Amino acid sequence: NEFAAGAAYVQGRFVPIGQATISVLDWGFTRSDCTYDVVHVFQGGFFRLDDHLDRFARSMEKRRLAPPEGREAMAETLHRCVALAGLRDAYVAMVALRGRPRIGGSRRPADCDNHFIAYAVPWVDVIPKDVQERGAHLWIASVPRVPDASFDPTVKNYMWGDLTSGLLEAHDHGFDTAILCDAQGFVTEGPGFNVFVVKDGRVLTPDRGSLGGITRRSVLELCAQEGIEAAIAPIPRALLEDADEVFAATTAGGVMPVSRVGTRILGNDRPGPLSRRLKDLYWRRHAEGWHNTPVRY
Ligand code: PMP
Image (cartoon, rainbow, N blue to C red; front, side, top):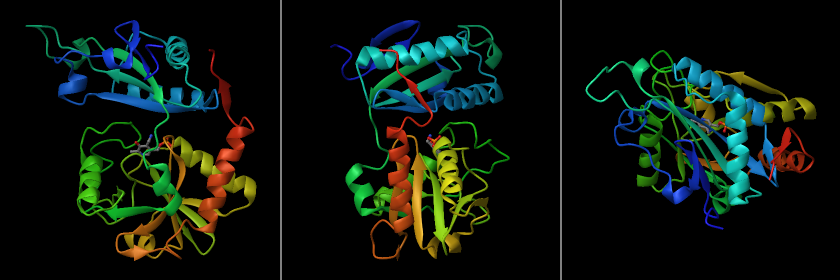
């Protein structure tokens, strides 16, 4: 299968992932003027596909990106990419790019040829499995998260580079990944995940500077079902450093325990009990067909 490494939809055609390319003139490339979403496929089913399509639609609207494909065509394209690649477990991306300005003509964003691309590749974990097992080591980045007033954090984009700067810094210091605080010292999110803090049996996640994560929403649903007290709240950096447990949450990896935050070692330097419980529950619910849309192979 020439699509085994992944299948992409670009310029109206399905191609093997290695052959999927865009123009050097595309503002999606030269100006990061794009937005995207990522949904996963677990054992042959999309998880919360409609929620991802909804968020993608909102992101496009906020950035005034309007590719010609409608929602149904986009959904159909995602199914096709997964089916072509023959994947049972996949990382599936949908991307809207500003496109090219008219050659020698208008430089107005509204006159660019906005376009939609998509691809499915084998499963990706933003934090590798073995690191999840021992608990990730989170570096507290020195770069502040870009203010919400400058760029709406609920629009998926890495345009400002702050999250990537945090990740580079984490790797320089031998950490697995990073967590960013805002300029006021409140915890926001990391490069590719929302974060949760457990303190005295309560589960907290930041109220600012972060994407409305769909995994975050799922974790809050699980807490409600299990009678675990949980809230979206301001989290000062000191609370993160003083947490009983910390875990990250994302489509590309699920619930991912953290065992160290900066120089602090949490508990016994292993994933904490509530983090492990929520992680197990998250995957057990998947196996039971929670929010599942079967892929049309
Ligand atoms: N924050 C950022 C910056 C992300 O890139 C992601 C990954 N999509 C998340 C949070 C987690 O969001 P979700 O659970 O919807 O994947």
